[in-house]
Image (cartoon, rainbow, N blue to C red):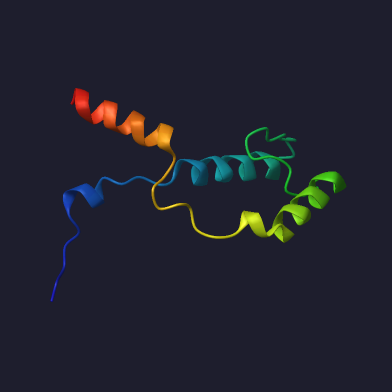
Length: 86
């Protein structure tokens, strides 16, 4: 069986950030210092206050569970108005 990819799949290009990371790697290998402002600093931990606040939020039972099945009234009204126009 010979399965051919569709023309749409054949048009998919390499992921944009993958190409950027390769460019950065090539520049760094030439000794050029690159400062990335796009991704953040995963080499540094968040401030201790952030970690403490997150831990408190994780332990708060009110932060767990499913959303109400009826949704937020204002959002439901906005959806209804939009559907009413269209």
